[in-house]
Length: 151
Image (spheres, one colour):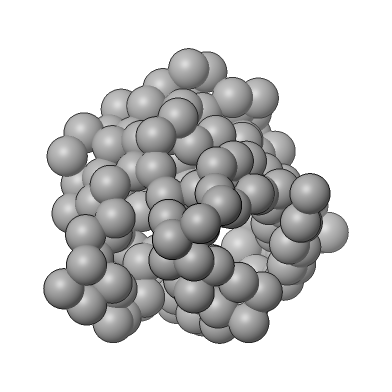
């Protein structure tokens, strides 16, 4: 099964990183252009909480539903219940490196469907695309955690 790993540091304490990711607006804040996310339902982050949304890749809507597991101040895992992938399990881990610096580790285990359906997800979620997505998320995370937004 394919895996994707991405790690970066932010100049923010662990508690601030955890609170930012636990905020119900985090998904919108971390979705980079040109993708657009339309949130249908998002529950406050907690064990078993759910998020339902549509990612717009240009004119193409990608419906997604995820449930959160292993929620703690040190991260959480979101598991796709419905969406474009055969399997998608995304673990976010936060590790304090100092009082003011936190490392964020992103780990994804995923599988594509076969046939035409799988071709679509392979085009959107192959390794180079995931690397670009998470590089953008790194930049957005750093920007928001240093107070770059007014929300």
